[in-house]
Length: 184
Figure 1 (cartoon, rainbow, N blue to C red):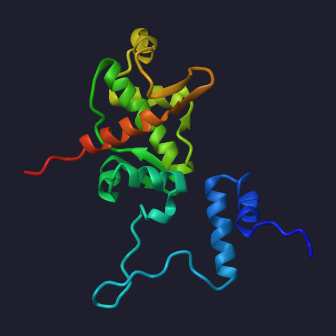
Figure 2 (figure 1 turned 135 degrees about the horizontal axis):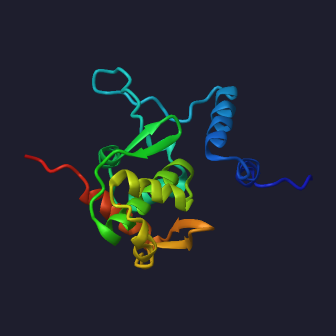
Figure 3 (figure 1 turned 90 degrees about the vertical axis):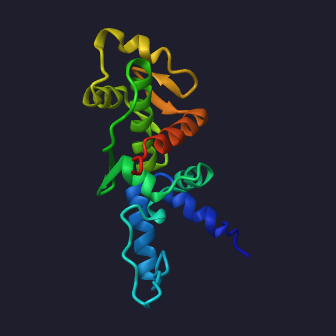
């Protein structure tokens, strides 16, 4: 008997070094080759296929799917804050806060855009600064001071970049919920 790997581990070993977009293309191509679909067609009551939402849950890396579920986020909530173009996400909502709160909120949301794209909430400092500039809360002289007040939401530094910690992921989910449009 040959020494066979667990099929799941073999697939993981092949996919792990690839970026998220490439992983999805490879898995989709393999499923197509095998004559299968990744997601069964969802039918509405009239029997016709429902249009696929641009934020289809299958588009998210597994870690992101778990975060969405744990924090009870909805597609609508994500769509009110982020826009997806191709594989990239951008912030489309007005980010609340000024001073250190505004800076932290922008950095958290930048990290979430990367998280949605790749499953890794890491990003470079310049992306965070650019978001702050776009939101009007960047104050060059105070920026370092504001970042020193980040608490445990982020780890890293200006040179190495930032990553959202587990407490930061929870804080970001709460921020997304708070950013929802008010009815009436």
